[in-house]
Image 1 (cartoon, rainbow, N blue to C red):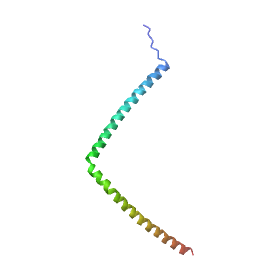
Image 2 (cartoon, one colour):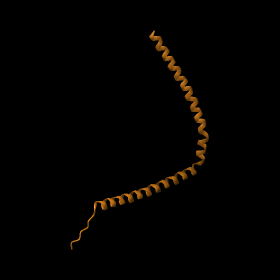
Image 3 (cartoon, rainbow, N blue to C red):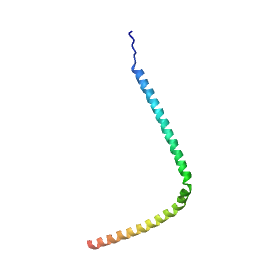
Image 4 (spheres, helix red, strand yellow):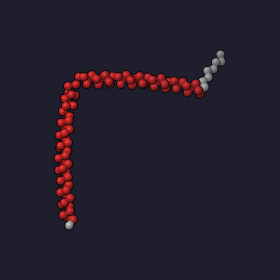
Length: 94
């Protein structure tokens, strides 16, 4: 029995291409399943913590306003300190 099995280069490349395609499809399915799990978890967390999230949304603008006021005051203080330092340096230059 002299049986030979011959594979051409085209057959080999097509086999590799099909294997790569199957692996890619499996990867996409796993990725989609994980994405769906993540979305379900996010929805569950949002429904469980709805009151806390609403409270944060109500309080956040006041916090931002306070930060803006404080940063404005700090900027004026820094500018005043800078001007004072420049005037001292200018006095020593003369």
